[in-house]
Length: 185
Image 1 (tube, rainbow, N blue to C red):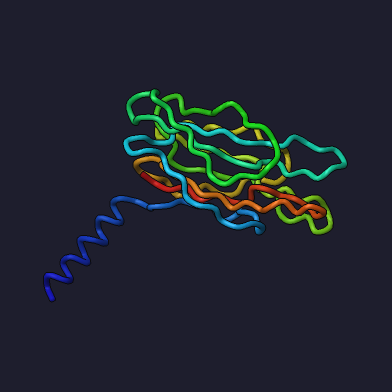
Image 2: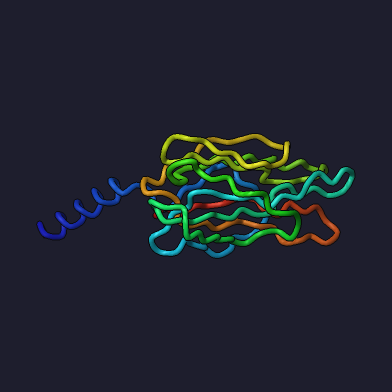
């Protein structure tokens, strides 16, 4: 019994010291389904990200951010680089990457437009990340919605992501990217 209690105590201490295994925010969109987790290769950490954006469509159906990808690099080097891309929407083009000047991604905040009722819904409009050196980097997204709070921090950096994406609605209102969960190294 003493051995079992000791093991449980040590396990809970190591979990508390190690920090979270995944980080999320509470303002994600309500539509779509979760795709699979994609991860940086072993020995690499996410040092940057890029967004797949559909620009303003005027009177047409806006979807804003359709995808996010991570730029994974060795912890103490910038090459070789691996790009990992989770589930994404159909529309838009990839931005240039936003890379931590020194360090790696540790937490994020997401800009989301709430449901618009009979209006045009977009869901995710942008991301901000904090780097391990304290720097904040922000994508080039769209103007709708507002930023929610910051996620918890991944002590050893972000190494994976999964996204919640709405499938094309054909004759309905499309949103594409609705939410993301990032996984700690």
